[in-house]
Image (cartoon, rainbow, N blue to C red; front, top):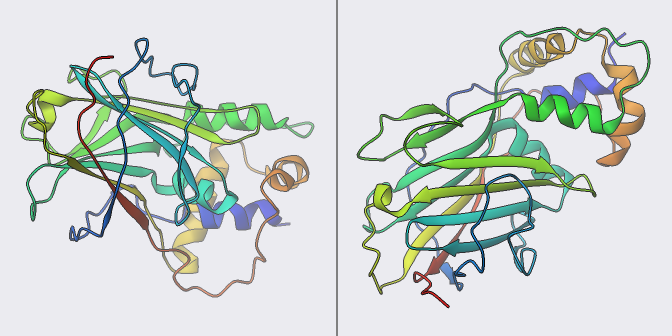
Length: 270
């Protein structure tokens, strides 16, 4: 019998793996201050390197975030604070862009992207712990998507790429997804001595699709875990994120993308 987990997965994985780039129309950007790291930032999905533990917040996306830079990289740390934002982040990722030429599509990194190819099936004899489910999700994150870089062909690149683009994700003790991204300044075409503010975009990508497509996507994902995952999954992990929607939802658009813009000058050494 289909259970509430099926509805969760229908919502979560009902999209194509290809990220479509919408027309770039810049909204009003909030002025924020980029930080110069007190110590080198290790891209590992942990916030140990961020001294004030993400002091900036955007209400529209329900994201906590901070921006930093040194002589070599732009850094972004993000943490979700709402169940609905977590669903969309896992479905299609967050796109982070840096725009130094107005009216042009900026260089953009999208992360995380979950690999949904069939893998080892899990035969469950009892309900998995939330930590185990989180582990399985993180194991499916194997690449970063790039768009608009002059030196890189648009598409997916490995987490262990040679371009210097880094990204990592992890769940914290409160079950929030933490992400860190580092992009080399040289790849963005930014002069390290630049004084003018740079406009950055942060977008949680939306998703939509008819029920039949959603069902196929959900079944493919459920197969990764050996099928029959639903009833055991719902009791603990579903409650963590506020329950799941009714299975008889209408086959209409589920969600749209949500984005905001920030503007910041490069930080200088302390």
